[in-house]
Image (cartoon, rainbow, N blue to C red):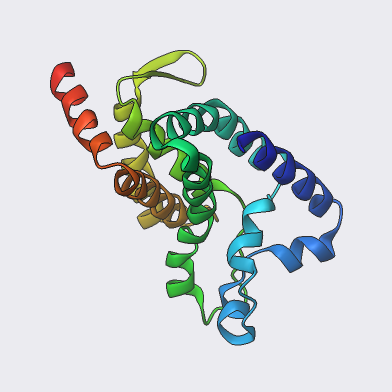
Length: 202
C-alpha cells in the first residue's frame, strides 16, 4: 500500500503544481469546509504539496518508514494488517486537520496542503514499534527513534507557539499523536513492548 500511496501522491501533487485551479480546489481551506461543506478537502489536501521540496521530504520519509510499519502491521495484525495501515495513514491525513478546523474556520485566507500529518502518524507508529532503531538525521547524525520523537515534538510545539513560518506545526503534532495512539489501539501489546525496550535501554 505504501507504494501506491507514494505513486498517487506524487502524480496528483505534480499535476496540481502545474495546474493552479486544481491546486486550490484540493487544498484545505477550513473556511470553505465550515461554510460551503467541502468535506472532501479534509482528505484531498494530503495529496497536494506546496512545492517539490515539500513533496520530496514527505515522500522520502514515508518511503523510509512506511514500508517497515506496513510489514509489521501485516505480520502481527494478520489479514487485516493492510486495512489497519490504511486507517493509520488516511486517518492521519484527517486527524491533522482538526487544529486548523478549530482555529481557522472563520478565516477565509487560510489554506493548507501536504501529507505531513499522515507521514507524522507513520513516523510515530514506527517509533512505537522500534523505539531504539537508529535514525540518521541529515543522513549523518545517528539518534534512537524515540529520542528523535521527543525532539520532534519539542521542536514542533516551540515552532507552533512561535508562529510566523507558514507551516502547520499543530497539524504535525496532531498526526503524530494520532499515529502513536491509534497503533496502540490496534495492538496494546505494542505499548508494553515499547516500554520494555525503553527500560532495557535505560
